[in-house]
Length: 194
Image 1 (spheres, helix red, strand yellow):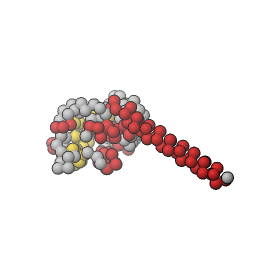
Image 2 (cartoon, helix red, strand yellow):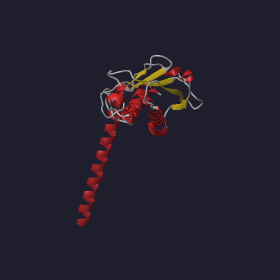
Image 3 (cartoon, one colour):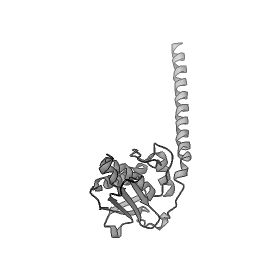
Image 4 (cartoon, helix red, strand yellow):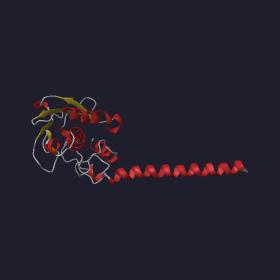
């Protein structure tokens, strides 16, 4: 009798576990679908970017420090993140550092004053630009290391992602966002575009 009761309890647990797993899997799928609004927008014609022999997008980036703070470490950290940690290593990008003349993504930093942005991307031309505003670092206690997160967000724009109202994603529309890693909607956006 005890064996039969134990078997029923195990059966209930397994069936319950399968139901929970099924619900979670469905939630992840619907979560990605619910976030399609910020990654369905390929506004900037990335078909014009050069691709290597493996079909990856060649991202040639440069960094120029104009102001007092050097963010090259944060730039390289963000590039590493996009190069090795996105989409489980199946990312569509091939990064190379070069001079601004040859770059298709030009990153610069300067003191742009007390304005409402810490970083911004201009993606309307073949050469994309990212600007970092060191004013917030120097005057408002916004730590230099946090610019890595800002760069992840701005690279998202460079790669075609738009803002979305979900605080767990790098592309959350409110700044500053302290989410360092891409979330399911961010990664689904990159996968959808490329």
